Amino acid sequence: MSHATLVEKIWAQHRIADLGGGSALLLIDRVFLHERTGGIALQGLAAAGRAVRRPQQVFCTMDHIVDTFPGRGDATRMPGGTAFITSTRAAALEAGVNLFDINDPNQGIVHVVSAEQGITLPGLTQVCPDSHTCTLGGLGALAWGIGSTEAEHALATTTLPILRPKQMRVNFLGRLGRGVTAKDMILKLIGLHGASGGVGYAVEFAGAAVTSLPVEARLTLCNMAVEFGAWTGIIAPDDATFEYVSGRPYAPDGVLWQRAVDHWRSLASDAGAAFDREIDIQAETIAPQITWGTSPQHSISIDEPVPDPQSQPDEKRRAAMSRALAYMAVEPGRPLVGIPIDAAFIGSCTNARLSDLRAAAAILKGQRVATGIKAICVPGSSRVKQAAELEGLHQVFIDAGFEWRESGCSMCFFAGGESFGQGERVITTTNRNFENRQGPGTRSHLASPATVAASALKGQITDVRRLGRQR
Figure 1 (spheres, one colour):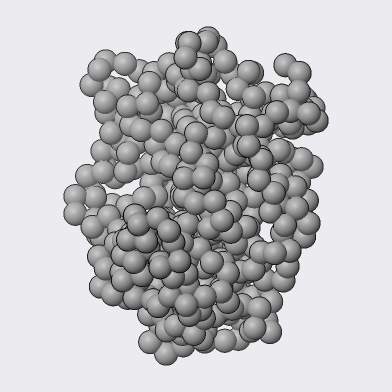
Figure 2: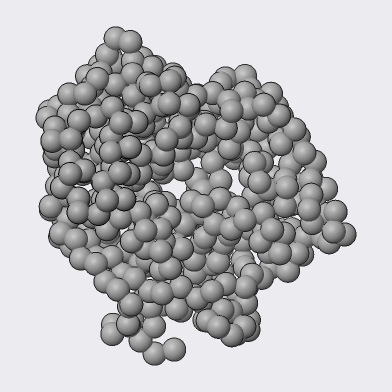
């Protein structure tokens, strides 16, 4: 294929058959499951009398509804949640797939574990019944979220019929400013172009500001491609990627390693490759971002006034903005800086890797969170937790007044278990801020780990650039 995009190259390498109407049957290299939906897929497959075709290529972890308090077991705060855990465990063991159980040292959030274990590799196709599977595009993989029925199909056949997406490239040009992170980059994009700006597209992130990002930051950038409405997000692998992958448990080694790297170097969009749409964003124009409303597209620079619905000509948009403002109890025309918060949360598949915890700890070190603030840190995996503790980061969080938890999705979302309170204002490193996302009536502001840490110290929404303590 001449002048192909990165996505087109991986697509062509995995295409088994053209199905007509723009669809193709693709080979699926990896399937990852978790206890909230994975058990359903495995049980459905077994009930139909079908086996997992390649169990060595299937992985399962406990992350979505597990308790994150120390000393945890199968009990969970989600009503009926224990059954999800025990049934998934039984189904995974029966199917013979790779299982990272609750007390396994490799347990963690599915997208964090997949990268840190070397399960995801550049150029692979990977699916999971979770919308944020696009996270793994940060390693140069073609990864996307699916439903439980599609998961059964992939488990039984190692294939999936997929409608070919359109191609978009988002170029972040130049250099990021002080206090600005990958989380701010993706929130800026969504704020500018909306939560449906990427619908129907596979989005390749490119430009100097992207290639200068460390790999874990690239995972954050791709994680929220789905909040842009995209089918997936992806970044071309490079030497930083290969260094990150090298030596991980499921990565190739020896002669196979060199053969793999030789292939991975070909995984880049050709000069002259045609994209259906391109967006350019100057990195130096991006300030730390924060959401004011109930969608990731309600994102503004932290020192920018909240927009006024009356400035919008579209009646439906005005109504939606007014509802969001009422739910969040914020006023248009005023910046969010200085608004008191009730809680701070650092966690999720977006921002709970070791580099995220280091960034927050650099701000928290020697400080205490403001009086009355409920502050929680949930590492993205048990390996992240262990590495953080070896560095003493856990003590920084504890001394600052944060709860230090076991790994899991925790309060990224409310599933009938633990939540923040009615009307409580939370600044959070998670990826979604819909009404009731973190609890009934909870008001969630999305931000980077640095912004969350700074705000926890002050007890109010804070511009990290004004703290005088940079990561």
